[in-house]
Image (cartoon, rainbow, N blue to C red; front, side, top):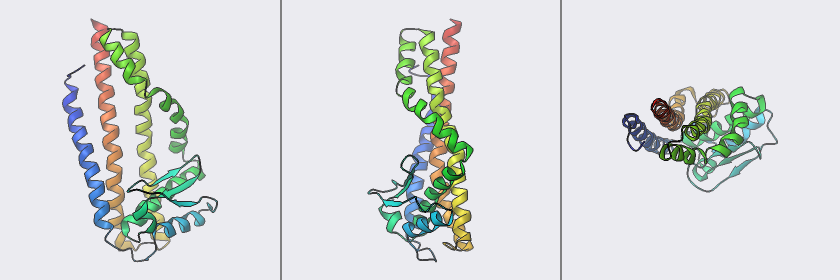
Length: 227
């Protein structure tokens, strides 16, 4: 378990994850210097998009930090970081509208978002226990513990896989509405796609790492079960 052939692929996926994080920051910073033709701020764009979709009760709040933007489904609030809330760039509008995309998903009960919300309590409970069970199962050669650890870890992997269509769908909604509502011009859609696409890569890389790790644990379980 300390070294396994799958570790080569996991290391490559980890490097991909680092590259994706570097790229999302670089892409955001690049287009943070490109003002949107509409001249509106991320906060204004988010507010207008929420109102246009019947979400007038969902507030847009400022949150400190960089790229800390998110939609809180429990409080039903869109929170935007400094540069997104106050900025009027392609990056600011793209990120702000992406978070509104999640709020719209919540309103229409987008199936994958509903599934993610339902699995989250389970994942939150078992994700911290899974590594301990996997380690205990390996060191004490207890295939039962190893199997339970794999099952628990599978829940976390499922959560990350479900997150992928949720994120891609939110970006798709954002790009479509940004153009329709005049936040950006058609000629600016390519830049917005680059910002949102870079962010999506981080989720893809994280999911890939988890899938490869799960495959590794399953292979270890099968080999130990055969001994």
